[in-house]
Length: 191
Image: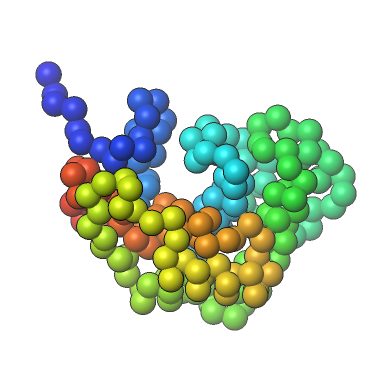
């Protein structure tokens, strides 16, 4: 019988959540579309739990055309009305409209920087920050970098990108490694 792996304390017993923690959370992402997806899903989480959004992630992908920004910027009132009755996502008009605004801001950012990844990763000089937290209470909700990222994203027209959302995004996409030092994922090497 295999011994249970030590994981970060925020992980519950749902195999979906365990898999997310073990395979995705904190793994550096450089793909523009996937970064855009995570930024919007973190925004959808505002006031909710990540677990709630994770369970709805596939529905979000279907509802928002796999987070294809070129399609999202063309959403009209009819599409917004459809999204507002879609039980598979969080039916909040401000959050739905934010994805549309974010798509336009995302495309402008790509135009300016060549890629969204180049822009996002510039906030950590292109490589993950390796933190050494022992307890969940040690992990901050925001940092000076997430504050700076939030301010810059807002200046570019992004919505639902406050400092706490930005730090959760940074953790999710591997800009920071905030696995606890006792977690078996802390020592994984990502190339």
